Length: 424
Image (cartoon, rainbow, N blue to C red):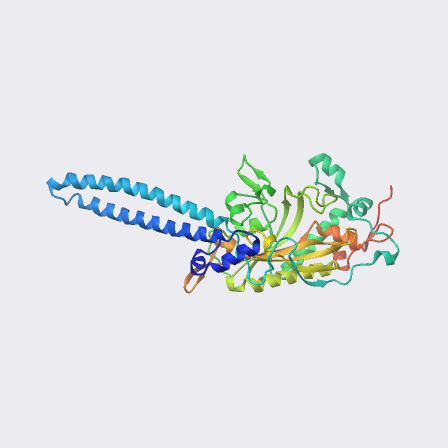
């Protein structure tokens, strides 16, 4: 949720943010008008209630001949107070709906525009392999995985439907190796590891900013009024709801969970293999920090993501995501995209978002300062996920269908240096 006090003092950054996102800047003025109406209605209600209390107290002191008149006035005031209270509640609810509908204000310097308006910050991990020079045509990740008996899409679809799968044999080992390496790196950096709930209440899901125009992407269980999470960010953000916490040093958590996404708006896109699926596993970094420390922590999250990508020896690029492609809660997001040789394109493998105080304000998470309490900031970032297997298999494949295991992963794969195709 945006800071209403800051919005009243200077609404222009919010208008500029809406324009950069491709949204309607008039929403800012609607919010300000609704907030003014809310405060005016509250003032009228409180003034009438104070008068009502004063008149009620005066009944016993009134002269006998005036008492009936005073009682009648008290009844009139009671009806007026009831009406004004209803008006104040209605004005408050409208103002709250508008405030909750507005996305976070983007940070200065974020590229304006939509999905394709990102800015490439740099390329890392060396040049992508030239398979033509090596004398063979690379196979896509699913063909490689099926040769390794690492992924079974057919039986996944038989059991659960399209875009479900089994990770089998070395595929299951590779996924666990990635997640364990991510957890070890995070613990070494001071993160507290957590296995998080994957079902959350509407209050938590909405508080993190996911119940918006993309809420149809989320699995909902109406009988229980619970949502399945698409990232452990949701459960981690809600961990300190309604608390005052100490963030003199960043409070960092590493969430390991299964994630669920309906992918309702991606029909026909990346449907082969495990690039875009309904269920996957992920290790997610999350931090609560002071508002002043948020940008520095965001930079650290990106560095930790790049450290993991270096370990799996992938060529990748870092992009500054455009404002129109940011989620509701993000004020800035950096993505790392690994090279996908069979599609001749870059594929997102990590993202890290600075959500400033937006989520914490909605979830009422604060820190204590000399001046009182103030809202903290939240940062999130992917450290490893099932999708990485796509890039690992394709970039480290050999002509005979085997896959070379990156050196850093070998200790997590019982020292195995190569994944060999299964014959027969």
